[in-house]
Length: 414
Image: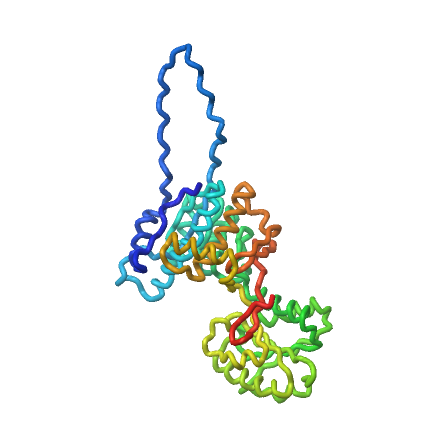
């Protein structure tokens, strides 16, 4: 059984009706518990009437309570009051909620019992701070959110290590939050770097790897973790050559390149101008020196990258977001989501479903406990969960997919 407010149902694709429904549903943020009817007084029975057998049905288990904190921005519920950014956050919230609740509904059909309580963080650190003092939030079995790094940092600092807190959508490193009850569901960048290093070490086995940098400091996190992982995996037998490239000048590397074996390049940059020039130079180099390229996970969303160049360079990227729309589980989810909400699911809805299914199962199977995450792997529709427990940082999902440009699209190779 799941005790939760009714579905958020958009009518004729009108998002504003969806938000208006959300406002009615969320109310004052405190949950509306289903009322229980008082038992009727038993009537007196003649002594010669046989006593009824006592009800042997087992009592319904006390529900696992999940507090969900999302940036709904309900104080701006009228369309004219929403900014573009606020509207995006509100959309995100509704979509994630619907996916998560659909997962809980499916578990409830199997006998699980949940109470899902919704709270509006307003994407405001002070609101998150206040919610951390809310008695109903503090006594939950699991807290989902806040969504954005500043909000969850403020919330966890106030909340302490009382209740497991799921960071549902942010890949921010738990090192910036430092809470032993934190659950980071989206793999931080360091695990993308490690995933690339693992694949290169296991599948390509090069003697040397070239890291091409733009010089921006935000690349340091990726580069440091990539080199650390490569050194560990290869026992420092693979040399990592890190070099800052200016105006696509790669001539200085030619004496170190092979004409017969794949030359592995890693580019942790996201700057459009740098990537445009450097990738064209690599494409020219590739005519005489075979190239295998590994890029930043953000590349998957960059429309300015040329698919033909990426394919010629045998470009790989790591990703935590890959949906196989042909598998049976995805087909079933799409059908059930459309039936429940009458709209197409977004990435946020799919993430919500995966996380609702996994963490709902954990609450249900482990008597509301979250201590087995690092022992329970999960393959979802959107991504998989492979958690490790980090002292002082909580549980971190380390699983990333390896994708490669093939036939002008990204396909999963691992």
